[in-house]
Length: 120
Image 1 (cartoon, rainbow, N blue to C red):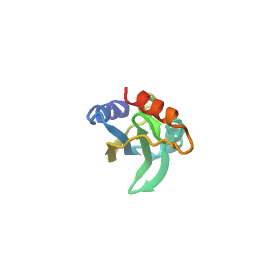
Image 2 (cartoon, rainbow, N blue to C red):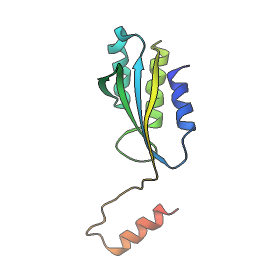
Image 3 (spheres, rainbow, N blue to C red):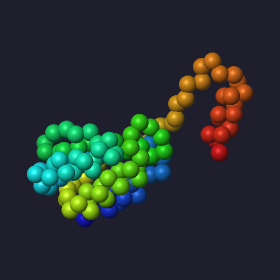
């Protein structure tokens, strides 16, 4: 199965309140590592070598310091288009976290407006 299709199936299987997803990616042909790295840089994949896994992909659902779902899907689609095959493994999924915004020093009207907008 193509990497982009596998990723889509993984994301579709997650509950709606997931916030962070960590995946490992291994490519089958290590001679094409540099070619694959060119595509993986578009989703800020972290290269590492742990038991033959080549990259760690950090994915954010609605907010966070990670790549978005469309960015990762596009990068994996580019790998598929280039004929680079591989395997994805889900390492960790976090859910139920909330956005934290610094409100120190802001007036109460700003805090109330922030809560009202986020509650919609």
